[in-house]
Amino acid sequence: MTIQIPRGTYDVLPEDAVKWQKIEAIAREICALFNYKEIRTPIFESTDLFQRGVGDTTDIVQKEMYSFKDRGDRDLTLRPEGTASVVRAYVEHKLYGAPNQPQKLYYIGPMFRYERPQAGRNRQFTQFGCEVLGSADPSIDAEVIALALSFYRKIGLKKLKLVLNSLGDPESRKAHREALIAHFKPSIGEFCEDCQNRLEKNPLRILDCKEDHNHPLMVSAPSIVDYLNEASHDYFEKVKAILDGMGIDYELDPTLVRGLDYYNHTTFEIMGASQGAITTLMGGGRYNGLVSELGGPETPGIGFALSIERLLLALEVEKIELDADALLDCFVVAIGDPAEQKAPVLLNQLRQAGLRADKDYMARKVKGQFKQADRERARFVIVIGDEELDAQKAVVKNMADGTQENIAFDELTNYLKEKL
Ligand code: HAM
Image 1 (cartoon, helix red, strand yellow):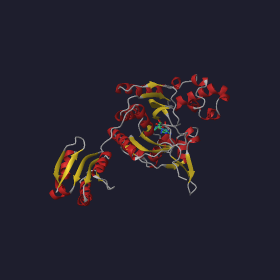
Image 2 (cartoon, protein in one colour):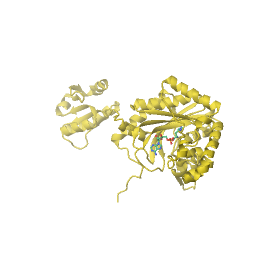
Image 3 (cartoon, helix red, strand yellow):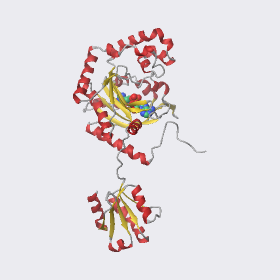
Image 4 (cartoon, helix red, strand yellow):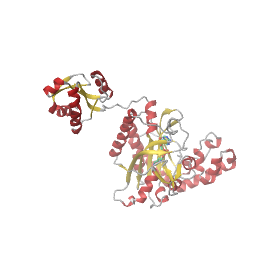
């Protein structure tokens, strides 16, 4: 019996891996532009971290975590998201004490959620995320949003919609929470079991319920905008004014509550062209209480994450092909035994000079070798046979325009480097 890949996961084969590399390279390039530094954290963490960080009334913690005990009887979980880990590392390494504040960080890596798999919803997926710790300046809220949009635009996506909301500070949230309980309590029996459990613990989660989203009480539920206190309202106005100044369009959506518990103040999502049931490409927001919740000093934070899987789907929907770069600088075609002996030596010289080079290993005829060079998207083909060996020269063919020149062996690398 053959063994198959686990449900909700996929292999990235070499042909697609180049797209991933390109996307990751653009993410790093944009982060450098905005001065965000990379942080790498483990793929598994203590289960407690996510229970406390993401929140134990969320779907992620209640239904979607890959949790296990290791051989030392420790409770561990494959990370379902990156924010809690980054904050844990920030506290553990006392990055709040570092001179360069705020800490502007980014990560790219696999996350794991036990969800029902479909296009754009995987059990292992790759997030690119940014987190800024240590600043409560509204221009940082605008900056992380601008960073994500710059990334998508650089990739080539056009159909993007930014949706914005504010959940306010703890005082505003408390007032809203009480209004939500009063609103849902009399009819809570009509809601699913999860919602019934969430009523007292975290009524905001009811608004995010996948089962009851059509219930009439959802539409008439008290809106957070009516409960923002003055400080929260002013903060949100500043964020919007900066986005306006940057020329970034957005839509306000007071029902945008997000599926994780740590948010307050600004929350946002970027939606893409419709890809079946899923349109959210990216999500994020402010989480001013999370650092202290995880044992650090009172520190503001904000960030976002997006998955490369959903980005690839959006590219498909918008019919955008990421340009395929040439994979090889040159391919050596050898004709006859002496040339076949020489080819590996020449190849070695080319590689040592920093050129991406390859040759045939399947005893192909000349035509087959040229075909292989083409498949590998080589920019130049270097042909050697008996005559070339006698003259110590190679025929160099430019695959783009078909022109060719004779070049002395010891001039080859200089010649190619100049042309490339
Ligand atoms: P999230 O909304 O749970 O937020 O996920 C962020 C993004 O990850 C989604 O918008 C989507 O692109 C992608 N994503 C989530 N689940 C899946 C899945 N099963 N398959 C494919 N893609 C998926 C967070 O994770 C927060 N940590 C974001 C954040 C960072 N907030 C502040 N800082």
